[in-house]
Amino acid sequence: MSERRFAPSKMARLDNPERRKALPPEKILTESMLGPSNDVLDLGAGTGYFTVPAAKMTKGTVYALDVEPQMLDFLKNRVQEEQLTNVEFIQGVIEEIPMDNETVDFVIASFVLHEVEPLSKGVDEILRILKPEGRCVCIEWEKKQTEQGPPLGHRINSDDMKAAFLQKGFRDVAVSYPSDAHYIMIAYK
Figure 1 (cartoon, rainbow, N blue to C red):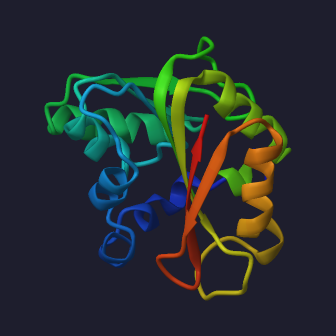
Figure 2 (cartoon, rainbow, N blue to C red):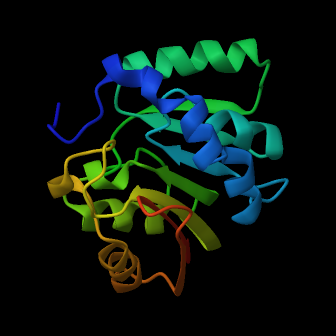
C-alpha cells in the first residue's frame, strides 16, 4: 500500500459528526448539481460518506470505487442496511479506473486525490470516464498545516489542483472554501 493511501484501521474518522457539520454531503451534492438520473462514481468511497447520500439522490447507478477490500465490505453492509439497490462496488485504483470511457455523469473525489500518484494520471482517468458535459466535485485539504488531515507534503494547493484539471482539458473549474482548511472544486468537462 502506498504511504499516501488512507489506512482502513482509521475508517471511523471518515464519518463523524464534526465532519458532517463542516462538510454535509447532501448539501455539497445538491450545490454541485447532482441530477436525479445521474450515474455517479465515488472515488475512494470508503465508508460511503458520499456514496449513500448520492444513491438516495439519484435513480442512476452509483459506482463505489475503493482500493481496499475491507472498505468495500463495510460499505456493502451499509448499503444493504439502507436497502439501496442502485450501488455497484468496484475494487481498483484511481490511476487506472476499471470502467469504460464516458460511463458517468458525475464524479466525487472527496479527500482522495492527494493520495493519487501522479495526480495527472488520476485527473486523466476522471476526464476519461466522464460523459460529455459531466462534472467532478473535488474536496480536498488546502496546503496548510492543520491539526487534522494528511501530512502537509501530501496536500495539494487549490490553485495547483485547479491548474491540473484545466491543463488536462476540463473547460471550467469553480472553487469555494467552506473553511480555512478545505476547498471544494467543481470541474466541468
